[in-house]
Length: 191
Image (cartoon, rainbow, N blue to C red):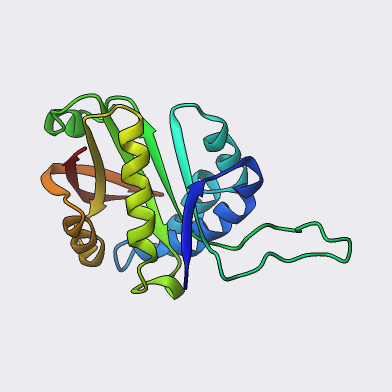
């Protein structure tokens, strides 16, 4: 598998929403109410919301695609959906709005790694590493001094991945999915 991370475009919104619907449930703690997950996906990770994210100048969305998978092409030779996406990342520039995060992210300006998800079929094949490297490069290009993220305290796989890429624990914050509030670790890394 050969993968590339690139800036997402407006035409990627449907594919980004599909990847988000597939991957977000994997990051939720076991026992999270499925209706709450579904509500979060339809309100925060819908195609309409990705249209908004892609148009927002404070956000940088990266698309991860498999270079070996040819895009679907109709008879006239124009791509239908573009290259299938394996994952995505979203950065949000600006200082943290959450008081718990602001208290522990000292190096400013900071950028948030709001989302970094890879489809389960691509796990363990280096795709997430490619996406993380592109994400860090994009974060550096914003002029930020640090990058931070929240990760669920029960998501050990993600915590190990972030530690491997230089993120360190700095504190905790709350994250709401539907009617449930979860505890997240705040991880930070200098850029």
